[in-house]
Image (cartoon, rainbow, N blue to C red):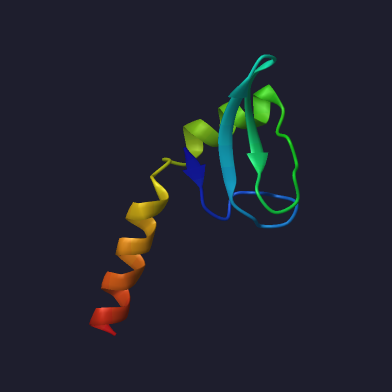
Length: 65
């Protein structure tokens, strides 16, 4: 799951990963690891969407313009 431009530190893209220590939400650009409370708040305020949907929406906007 991705949150595009969701990092409050660098403005980068966040992604959810899971390892032996549990589930984490991390930034692709700066490597920031969100706390459980921040990840929960992120999930409730922003609807996550696959990256492919974001790319197709961007292409549609470029066609219209």
